Amino acid sequence: MRMNTSDSELAGQAASGDMAAFQVLLERHYDSIFRIALRFTGVREDAEDVAQTVCTSLAAKLRSFKGEARFTTWLYRIVVNASQDFHRRQSATTRLHQAYGEVSELVRGAEADTARELAWLYDALQQVGRDLRETAVLVLAEGLTHAEAADVLDIKESTVSWRMHELRKELKTLAKAEA
Image (cartoon, rainbow, N blue to C red; front, side):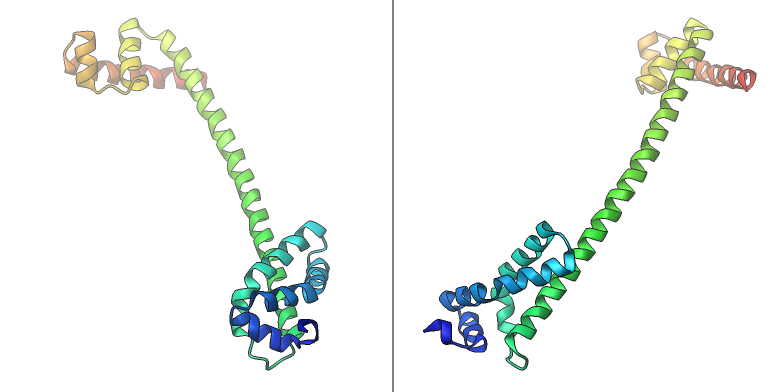
C-alpha cells in the first residue's frame, strides 16, 4: 500500500514520525540522491558521504517540506546544497592542509635556525672563561635567576650580573669577528 502513496503524503507522514514512511522515501529516492551527489562530486566515496549526510539529515528537514514544489525537486535541492557544502568543506580542508604545510616548513626552518644559533652559542661558550661559562649555563640554559645562580655558585648576586654582562660583551666580540 505504501508503495502507491505519493512522495508528498509519505513526506508528511515521515515528518510526523512515521519511520515506515521515511524508509519508503529513502528506498524510493536513494539511487537518485547518490547519482546527483556523484555528478557533483565526481568521486564515488565522496558521493557516498554526501548521500549519507542527506539521508541522516532528511528526517529533520522533512518538517520544512511544504509541498509547494514536487518532493523530488525539493529533495534535489537538498542534495545539491549538501554537495556544495561538501565541496566547500573539502576546499577548506585542502587550504588548511596547505597552510599547515607552510607553517610546518617555517617551523622547521626556525628550528634549524635555532639549532644553528644554539650550536654557535655552545661553541662560543667553550671560548670564554670557565666562570662565565658556568654562570651562563645556570642562567641561560637552566633558567635560574641571578640570585639562584649566585646561591649555586656561592658568590654574590652582583657577581652573577657582572659575569652575564661580560659574557654578552665577549659573545658580541666573537660574533663580530665571525661576521
